Length: 180
Image (cartoon, rainbow, N blue to C red; front, side, top):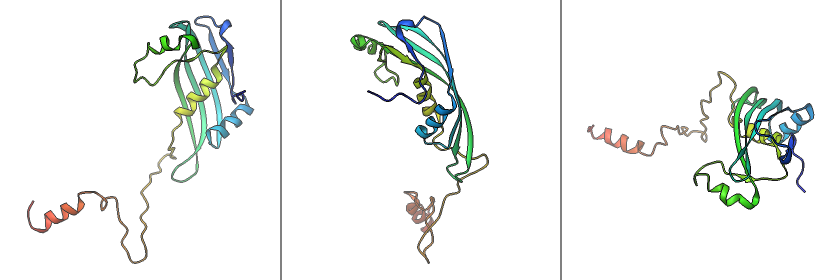
């Protein structure tokens, strides 16, 4: 049996009504657990507003917006960086027996595809997944730039990015014989 998600808000499919709003906000325990899951120093807030509409062959389309606030570590200085996001989402669910029919409604290269419809749709888990995917993988503190690191053994000049260009040697040779 799968473990219950950190931020769970399951809604039984049998009770879904077209257009009903579903919303929730993560409590302190869920925020702490989500921070561990997302490997960030803190999740300060996470909430969502969503709705479900009938879709396709007996399925549901869930759409909404997740709002979240995080503390991440700057990739340059490792200092805390507070970030916030407001990310829309859209997910499709179809009865397992009609998945092939539902999948035919999507372009083969589409990122989204229908998911098997269970007895309930977990709106909280959808919000948590959306927030995780929207996190900046390389957060930087405002005004911080990475200038690069140049290292070499003692007595050897460090190689720069410019030195590593594949045609840098040809350019140097070209300039040696006086041609342009």
